[in-house]
Image (cartoon, rainbow, N blue to C red; front, side, top):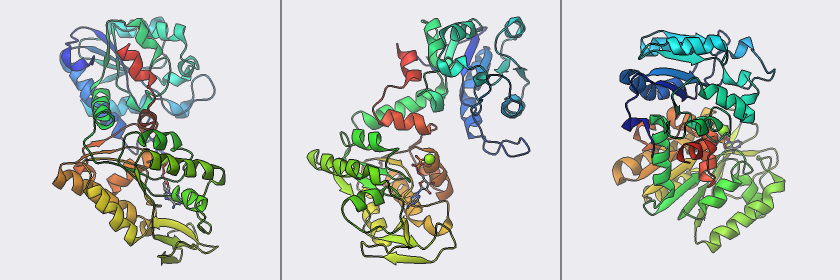
Length: 398
Ligand code: ADP
Ligand code: MG
């Protein structure tokens, strides 16, 4: 693997694609700096080498094809300079004599951040000429933006071809690739995947691909109701995708063919409203009355799922077991978090968690530091699990 670890970049202008797509509050304060913190090892390694670090990043989804004051990366530059204890040079444009001059004037160990790259529509089109112009700013290219590497954009993929001998993975990317490879290539058995979340439609391809590799597939969350309705059960007002019921049955059939044990909830916590203040019942039976909806897995299911997880040597978890954002329906998700943490800590299992909401759930549960690997890329990790080749990874490997 071509990683920055093995190279000294002293005096080199290094163009680094990072994922700084952080959330802000109304006062323009960063509410979650995880993505910035995760890029620090790579930035610090390069500045320590004495490289001139030129960072490229995007923020949000600019629509206008030009500068949008709400989506400027200036607050990120200010924030980053505090984190690395040095000034971060910020440029308002990406191309042109002014930027070239600023790049050439950087001193060894200095850091610069280019304005939101998606202010240029060429970025998301993967435009070759735009990528080539960008490439002229640096002597080497580093991709450390795992969260964006499933996109075939100019700064995440196209640009790599202009650095045939000087393109590298950053430390964050390297860590993601090492762990994902460990997960999907020769995992220790038994391998259990726990897949939840609201909708089956967003996870069909993940489920299909996982059936080729896992021993156990545990299903939770809102998507279970599509499976259960397809099997003829009454699900009341639970979330359901009627047009995906045939896919659900096909997946169950496929699992049988491939000898994968599939686990679906046997009891559940139901509510008469989609609200933390709703009336609650615990049903042992498979019938949810009209006016009620399934919000979490029940006690019996928690026990069943935890037992399977605790017997596993490899565990992948994506998608909460219930509406974990509401305290009254977070119990199932927290219990599975505990089981995954225990299997890792006490049984030596390798555990991996990914997905925006799943990462929020494991953080909320307090077990995050027990997990072997927590992915930084929601969409990117899911596409990897679907068996797809991610353009940002391929571009460096080629
Ligand atoms: P991730 O972001 O980790 O991939 P998803 O986006 O697929 O996860 O799913 C997370 C969402 O699923 C959460 O917002 C959660 O509230 C919702 N969810 C889980 N169980 C249910 C349910 N029974 N009914 C409705 N929504 C649910
Ligand atoms: Mg989500």
